Image 1 (cartoon, one colour):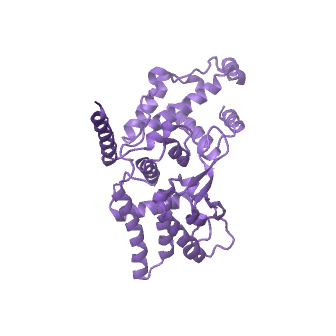
Image 2 (tube, rainbow, N blue to C red):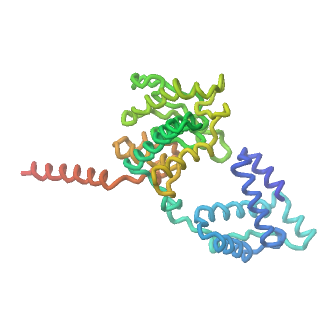
Length: 342
């Protein structure tokens, strides 16, 4: 059953590591919990399974619960699909047939657009600056102590600033090559750093990675000097030769997503920022701040690489200052309108 389901998903060009493998592991985990075969499973078993997961892990989230339930539901849909013959085989050999064990009454109800951790949020402007100051201070500290890692700290400082300036996902950022730097004729002063060509955007439903161009916006023009210093002064000292990767390591390879996470966590700890903030929060910050800079909704959506505007809205957490500015603008316009009336 599992091999057939795996083959079905591979036929849809779904990813092994990120999609198929975790789903197979979940089904095996559920089977081990029940100590039963799939044709013996009933709704009571899946309910006991999720009750067990929640009791053992107080931090078990709604989104993870839905993901698990969807995985089990899809497996049950596969083995109860008459086109694959498992119903007839089970009835003939075991006298029982598998049936769907998840239904509306024992499944997570999707009532909110955002189901992530409440602590995850955009950084304020002050927090962004504190993070960058902490990253720069790590460079100075390692230099002053004559310790190894100053070069890596310089790379990490530039990396975090780029994450914020462009709002890329982890895979998008570490997947960049030097060849992905782009000139933008509308901003000639930015030179080769006018835009980034993202080739490893988030894929969906077995599609290839989505591509897009992310522009350097004037409010983030400081990133031009940051990237130029990294490309001309820092990266060559890693001695990676002809390696195409933009972000490289002391082992002369491409920086991993884990390495990017560690760079953020080190700076976050040094800055004394809340542990709930993670690297993805910088993406939330960029999207939020573009909105506060009054960029059109569609431009922000395209920069973020979101298919629909609703997703961009979930990422946005504008500040009270911005909302008050909008309110003041509306009130001023309204007063002017009333004053002009005869």
